[in-house]
Length: 223
Image (cartoon, rainbow, N blue to C red):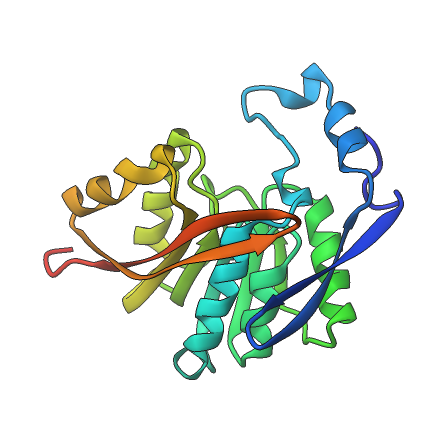
């Protein structure tokens, strides 16, 4: 794979959460995708989804902004942070954010993007959500943007929710309206979680527009 950190960068501007955010990313996304060899693909399918900014993260950032008062001063976990937009927004709103990604490269971009936007740094971690190296029941809020695009992600994420969420905590998921993630919510309900749909709006980024749901997930009374 090409050296994403050293490669030429471009800056995109994203309007959400009450302002314009400047986000750096790799300028030549096509070369990045084409450079992936079979040995890097492997069973984990390490595709560089992080190198793009997705509309679900844009609407999730807006949702955090609308809930600024309740996340202020709270311990929050950003799942699959990618280029760092939602983690930076949460941190700028006064939350204490821990943000992680499976890959190392996006964390470098995310750290630089916090600097570009004059925001304090979240705690950036390289971590596999199948093996979370964090203290249990330590987060008031957990969020993620467009991370349920693979069915195989469900079981480890549901396990992480149980391990990491504080009593009384909430999970917010920004997800495009699409078939692959549709059954997730019924399955969560079957396992004792309560889900709701507080927001559905169109969101756009990088010439892509999608209808996005914000799903709220909380533990049911018998969990």
